[in-house]
Amino acid sequence: ATLLTADWAWPGDLAVDSTNLYWDNSSTGTLFKLPLAGGVAATLASLQNRPIGLAVDGANLYWTNNPLSTTGSVLSTPFDGGVARTLASGQQRPGGLTIGATAAYWVEHETNCTGTGSLWSVDRASGTVRRLFSQSCPDYVAVDGTHLYWTTQDGAVRRSPLDGGTVQPVATGQDFPQRIRVDAIAVYWTTFSKIMKFTKADSKVHTLAEAQ
Image 1: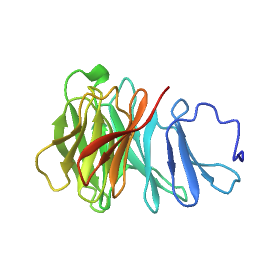
Image 2: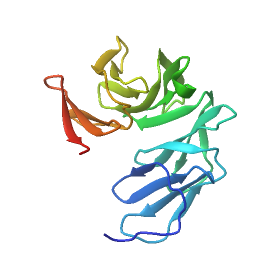
Image 3: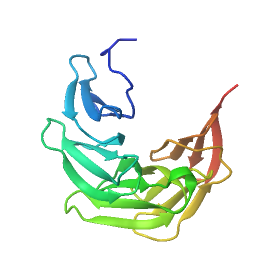
């Protein structure tokens, strides 16, 4: 293994593209980038309020600010630095974030799975913010060309067509599902002790790995 950098206390969420690694320090409110080949880490944004939920497109880093005592926000900044742009504000505990072809998507979740959470989007070109629908306990989110997928704190994985329609179950009875990713073939997520896979072709759920 190659040590890319050191002495960065409490790194949080990660994002990566073909040239850089990005991460946040939620305790200091700072977001960094580092070339994958190694070098000096650069600060992309600072003085943020508990940044989490990182994602990247071809030109920008996106994140959610999830403060404990006030409403949160969704922001972006160019890879080459500059002033952070607020995409959405007044959010109640915004969490997981993902980037689609035309929009950024994120969850707005409630503390300890009480009340009602929501899924939101912001059009990356126009800046139009939309509350897509209410959901119980949404946590992390992923997107492909046709659907939005998310995990919930009450043990489910769900999806909905991007153009609207019925929310559909992908899997239920999961043990604390968390991070979720999607590719052309399948949807993947973590639980308390497993890595799971949902194949799109046959709509079947498989266990990829399990703690021994």
